[in-house]
Length: 382
Image 1 (cartoon, rainbow, N blue to C red):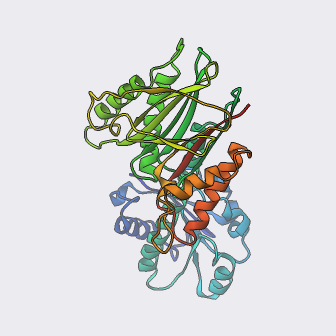
Image 2 (cartoon, rainbow, N blue to C red):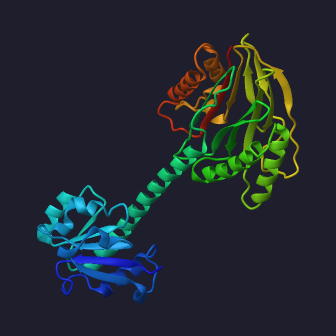
Image 3 (cartoon, rainbow, N blue to C red):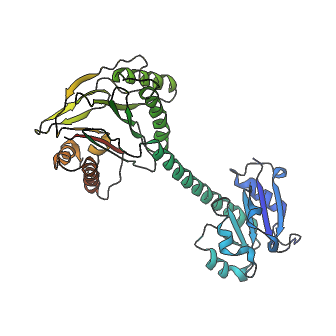
């Protein structure tokens, strides 16, 4: 790249300050993101009393000559630069304490102008570049979190006779779990939960692909209803074909509920759920085929229908809840999870999931969250 540097000093013609050759030499020693031949470096100088924040637009580096009286080094003004470009402040020894007192807790790097200024500048460039890159990564992850949140349903659907809720808690800023709802024209409703292998940014990118495929087949125009096994078959084929070099492995489960018959069918790819009857009986909703993304031509069966009565509950979760680990290396486990769901069948589905996630987090205590946690709860009401 061709690094663009802005130097702000009292007198741009002052030969005692950093000359262009020194700056270019330092940049070539630092390397990324300043990989360039010395002659390719673009350096512009401006007087400190004429500096405006907009002058820094499009720059890769800003070098200030500090003055305790110049408005160019006013902290409030310089603060606007920190999110966009690395800033280095060069001070005389007599101004050192004042500069460090003003900027010591900021991301502006302060170096003292001495006989070894060149080596100090190289070290400062390395620190400033690393801090700036870290700040950029944090902002990009924050934006990625917002994008991923927007991909998940903001609210549960309102379905006669059902109380529905969902929760998602990534192990990192973003994750590989997802859930979705899809109403059909025949008055049935599909519920989806999925878990892409891993967590973090890589899993989040793959999650977006998997969710997009599911939405294509669950919400295509004119759909009266969908055959759940066929949806898994199609999504699996696309995932297996598009990820030959870096496999995208994911588990998923689909449930379709019919309002008119108060019954449901399901299909799972390496993923199971639970039917908690109002009588206290628990029926596993077993997987009906292998994990998605392994082999293109894989068939998945659909099971059901199963009739539901008032008080029955369907629970769909990713493994991050049951596999929540305490600092004593104990698992939260399936039994604790199901007991939590059965505690109060009269409370709302949302309140039940809030309690489940809180109990899992309390069980984990100070131990780190190692996997994403997601759940969809469907409770039958009068």
